[in-house]
Amino acid sequence: MEQQTEKKKIVFSAIQPSGTITLGNYLGAIKNWTVMQEEYNCIYALADLHTITVRQTPATFRKNILDAYASILACGIDAEKSVFFIQSHVTTHAQLAWLLNCYTQFGELSRMTQFKDKSAKHADNVNAGLFTYPTLMAADILLYQADMVPVGADQKQHLEITRNIAERFNGIYGNVFKVPEAYIPKNGARVMSLQDPTKKMSKSDENVNACVTLMDSPETIMKKFKRAVTDSEAIVRYADGKEGINNLMGIYSAVTGLSFEQIEKDFDGKGYGDFKTTVGEAVVEALRPIRERYEKYIADKAYLQECYTKADEIAQKFSQRTLDKAMKKVGYVLK
Ligand code: AQP
Image (cartoon, rainbow, N blue to C red; front, side):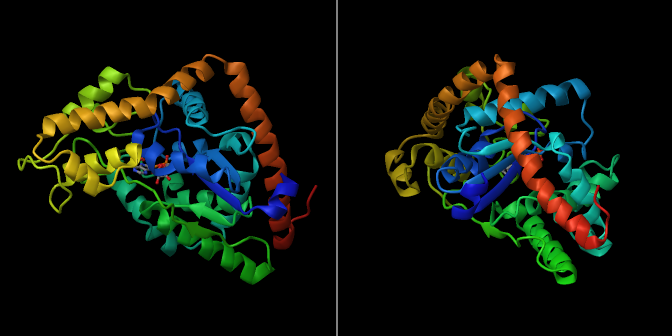
């Protein structure tokens, strides 16, 4: 990795095991990870430390971690090309997050829209971790001296605070952290809930029909698409006020590569029933190989362990150098 680092740009990205990985996570993030690993030095994390900012049931959480790890490998993350590690296995993340907490202002954390949204959603558990989530995310990114972070529109604010923290720290102590750039993927689809297309599709949605997961059976996927909320116009076209159809068109376009114009032409004169069935079938076929690989990986815990152990070690070694540098600058006496 050290040799590669000199040649290729470093990309960092992470995903939480807060539920079963969704079609939204796949089309919006992981599919792009598989493309980026061909060109960049990619470091990907399963961000399980972040996940407990929302209360988890231990047995489910444990299962979700391994399931998510296996599903992401199954999406095509190549353990030989990318470093794909488990965040809680690498000690530096929590350590640097603490340091960065002390260089981050209460006011700037208060302005984070995700904090406002999540505290409204989980009003019974507005914990300090939810509030300081951005400093842990900043630590994740800065530990690897990442050049680029692929971000969706919903995460721009978090990258911005990461850059501010890095610049502030560097301003005091010299060049400790690389200030990362946002990378906006060319084909980053935003997938909305099938039941309320004004909301994004989310792993933790309580309505099971709202979200398609990578582990859903073909029958379940078809059922969910057939129940998808649309409108009463009965014309397949992309337009304001047709969020349900716009979402289905976006999904269909992302899995087939067809343009919206072509989709409108192909479904001219056809009803929503036909369209939903076609979209459902296209998704079933796109997810079929992923689900098959997932079944193989999840049955082979030794293989999974081998993959994450190797990645964890690389991540620990690499990130330790950054942590040590930051600690030393602050004045700590290293052991
Ligand atoms: N609906 C979506 N469409 C496109 N991209 C999406 N992502 C998430 N949902 C969609 C992208 O997936 C990556 C990982 O996200 P995360 O696990 O860190 O948390 P999240 O964005 O909060 O994802 P969820 O599924 O909505 O989780 P919960 O329900 O736990 O909050 C990110 O790159 C994100 O943009």
